[in-house]
Length: 294
Image (cartoon, rainbow, N blue to C red):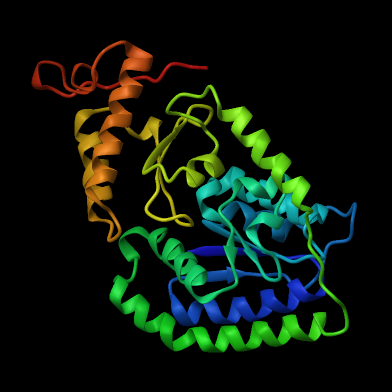
């Protein structure tokens, strides 16, 4: 599986090089792509980079204080999101906190450079492999073996860069409070399908529905959601297949299955004014469904 590593700036570049060499040690089925040449502002992507963006199934964005608003970081994040979906685009915060993020990068589930968060990221990459995924226990053992190497090398890069300067807060308390207020106001009158992944994360919803993208998101933990496109569900058998897939996930709980089925029930009522059984399995047989256009 192709994994695109996006970076901008010297600290991010060095970190990308280390991560490129480290990832296949943990998951051999992963082929990271990283270009050692930075892209100047106003310069077009090379055909090679554009091709790799299209071919990648997962994207990692290395975010630092220096490149938080770098144009090419944001462009590549948008290109990756369009190709693989936001669930498979993950910013790694090297010297930042999640609350430091603003603008377009907020829509993605960020990973802090810390052991627990990085293990969740590795789990998300592993899940994206589908049938080729590694057993969770085996993956735990491999990660435990290789994590110290990554931690040591990246910490060396980060401490060398910041040793001569005092790091202040990236965003003020007032700015953070204003963002929380804006999120609350934007979602005050929303129904079950808020479409705001940050809001859903803050409320710990097991299942959420994004009406704009027609996507159901199942939240196993905060950084590795499982997404289902509604255009993939057009019969009762496929609906059952997705329920079984969710049930097989190691972190799945009974509340996930219940919330998933409740979500399907609400969607059926919202679009077709019928219960889910009437939509997907009338008279005991499967029925194909064409989802209404916006």
